[in-house]
Amino acid sequence: MTYKLYYWPHIQGRGEVVRLALEYSKSKYEDVARNISDPDSARTLITEFLNNNNGVNLPFAPPFLIDGSTVIAQAALILYYLAPKLNLVSDNEDERLFAHQIQLTVTDFLMEVHDTHHPISNSLYYEDQIEESKKRTINFIENRIPKYLKYFETILINNKKISDWLVGSQLSYTDLSLFQIIEGLRYAFPYAITKLESKFPRVINVRNKIRDIPAINAYLNSNRRIPFNTMGVFRYYPELNKK
Amino acid sequence: MTYKLYYWPHIQGRGEVVRLALEYSKSKYEDVARNISDPDSARTLITEFLNNNNGVNLPFAPPFLIDGSTVIAQAALILYYLAPKLNLVSDNEDERLFAHQIQLTVTDFLMEVHDTHHPISNSLYYEDQIEESKKRTINFIENRIPKYLKYFETILINNKKISDWLVGSQLSYTDLSLFQIIEGLRYAFPYAITKLESKFPRVINVRNKIRDIPAINAYLNSNRRIPFNTMGVFRYYPELNKK
Image 1: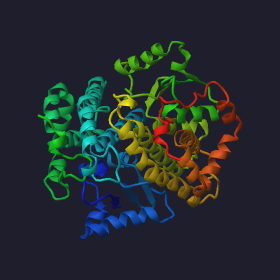
Image 2: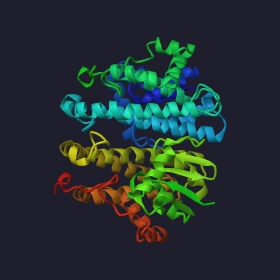
Image 3: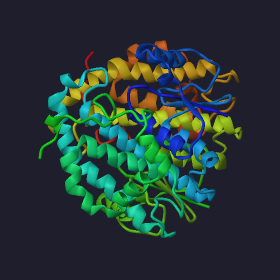
Image 4: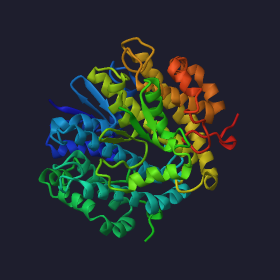
């Protein structure tokens, strides 16, 4: 069975946490919109799916996954659904729920990251909300990044199974998402994250261990990994970064 | 078994969708922080829980629910966990996942509502971000409210079970949350929502049917229902509303 992932073809965005899970587990999947050479047609494919009644459980937005007759949306829910099939979560129910809870917090974090460059509206260009972005980013760097990283660090410290992972004794999709958060922060807020990393050694250890996994390494070095850019969730803008 | 709900005692906020589910199902629950007469002590109770290692699955923020030895956070996940026990979701797995997917979209919507009055930072007062709030609210009213309501209306139209509810043939917790969205919009954006309601008759029908359910009616008329105010997610500010 080949999974079909629908997400914008030009960005990592909120779809990347799903791509990482599929790549880590070496799953067969088609990144549907990326297989269409014309970017406009690729985007149209997604919006038309959302605008038509296809007799399925309607997604509000991408990413969504098609698995046979199942259509499932919301990145965190896609991961919750996929993880048992991909051996990316414990089969202990309490741990499975905790992984999902952590992933929902990752979702919140990604939405907050996005709003650093779109504090006023998604319908406006970044260039039309730069001043507001500067204000939001200052607060985000000062208050929110440390708060979230401290949360992840605390979970790693508290893990009763004494593994290097967030949930239980094995790597789960939440660890892959934490890797993505660190990579994104390093790209978007390089000075801020440099100052912070030494405070969260367990988080950085997760990042390093994930980076060294052959399947992940191969993915990151392939053209399947879309480079960070100023269209996605994590964006680097010099004016939002102070040394 | 009495459920213990931990949420800020002075607002409906993100906890209200959980309160509605517990009230509709006439569940035994303790709204823990509300049972403490001093509001500061009540809030301290919650923050101390979050700051201490209690040997549990740590929440990032309230609301969280304690059910025996289980601690569970994130409003949408609390509902996913509770719903089968409270008969607030179908036992069909596909429908249960779809309900959760809808609820995650409700979560996104509530975060967007919140950011209409806090576009720059949660750490700043509304009064320090009024101009940015005006800009964000204009876009929210024009683009986002119609987009979300159209999504819910479309789900109601598409429901193959031809019920008046969002998922399958029976009322689910998502319908209670949709009720809450309409109530909140009517409070916070009375002119905007008045103009829109006739376009989304099935959504308004859900709201009206929920309102007439005796358990909900009794809750809304009790002092357990905290009135809308300018501290919660939905806030009415005259300067954000244009006739």
